Amino acid sequence: MKLKSINSNVIIEPFRIRSVEPIRFTTIRERQKLLEKASWNPFLLKATDVLIDLLTDSGTGAMSSRQWAAMIESDESYAGSSSFYRFETAVRDITGFKHVIPTHQGRAAENILFSLLVRKGDVIPNNTHFDTTRAHVEHRSGQALDLIIKEGLEPLTIHPFKGNMDTVRLEETIRETLGETTGESTDEISSESQSERARKRIPVIMLTVTNNSGGGQPVSMANVREVSRIARKYGIPFFIDACRFAENSWFIKMREDGYQDKTPIDIARELFSYADGCTMSAKKDGMSNIGGYLALNDDDLARECRSLSILTEGFPTYGGMAGYDMEAVAAGLYEALDEGYLRYRIRSTEYLGEKLVDAGVSIIQPTGGHAVYIDARHMLPHIPPLQYPAWSLTNALYLTGGVRAVEIGSVMFGLQPDGTEKPAPMELVRLAIPRRVYTQSHIDYLADVVIHTYEQREKLDGYRIVAAPKVLRHFSARLEPLE
Ligand SMILES: *Cc1c(COP(=O)(O)O)cnc(C)c1O
Image (tube, rainbow, N blue to C red; front, side):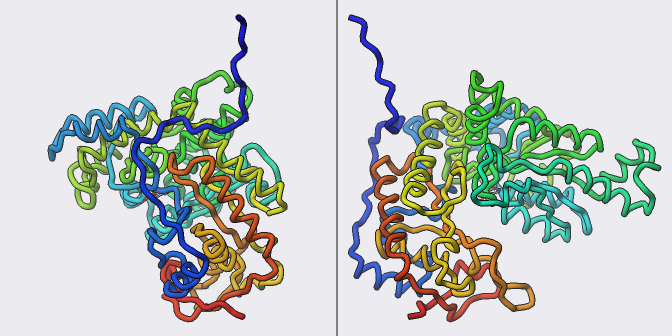
């Protein structure tokens, strides 16, 4: 008998589920009451009152039985635990970086790196700074410069690598910065003093893979290579914000010539080989619920980073993590690079995107790795930006189906430092997908909720803010629907 194997397009989860957490069903009347009690702010809901929780993909993933087993076998020593050495070996194996400094999460790695590198007036280029990265740069009075390619800012433009940095603007920025420092044209400076001067004003170039704030869009290997070439030409350290390095590696395999036959781990290794270091939140592609690290090659800088990490994180062989956390990350990094997992992960997000597009819902395209972003301004033209259309849609998704998403629009970004309000550039609703938590039928249900809400879009009302703090107001603002 010569039978052919099934070649199915159905997404099947590449795992069996042997530990489950019940989720609670509520009626629309209950949800109405719960949301009203939460001052119409989904951040103030209890997670147990949410059916499908898509607030973030950070630290919300499910761990594998192998990770739990490794955790039980962890070694809890203050200094030099075997759990640390397993963690260090895994990070070195994947990134190739010489020094591995554990931190309790990603922003702690940023804090250490930027405390040492960034001084007042410095310019830090990135494709797009993530919120905490920007905050750390600005906290040290540096300038966080986003140099994303123009397609990265156009929600409907299809481009395989919308997370790419505009390398022409990167080089222009470096040259302009040199010109400003010297008051001469850059051509008149010898290349050696040029690199010294560049280092003074641009202490590091960052690249975020995938580009979280830009919709989870990937960066191509060619772009990483070009950013690296420019950084080396001017003698500027190049660091990768690596939170979703595995998802980015999968996109390179799927979309970039020459990578189809490579494994995700080999792609990741090549990607890191072009950089001088990375910051990492293990709550994303570390497949862990907490943890992170700073990894780098420079011996002197690493020494300074370790000294500083003692102040905020703890001894450099645990850095704010328990031994069992380091075990979870050491195993999780490899699981994030597993082909079966990545195929399911990226396909599942893409599938959700396709269903929404087919129903007429506008989303940022192509679908990114960890989230789907709905364009609420387009869906709800009858709600003016300062009546918060994306907030309205977020609440409607909870009311219609118990889904919790997050507004990325004028409630989050509209308040100006002088106290006035200005509409945000886009009114988006982000559906961030936790790793290995929801199944295909959850995703089908989720698509139904969005489409069902879309069909009633004309009934959605705007909101007004009743009370809010001056900074990061979306987390605790109290609102009221305008009827
Ligand atoms: C989550 C994230 C961070 C910060 O990591 P935390 O673990 O949340 O501190 C930094 N950069 C990017 C791109 C992220 O997604």
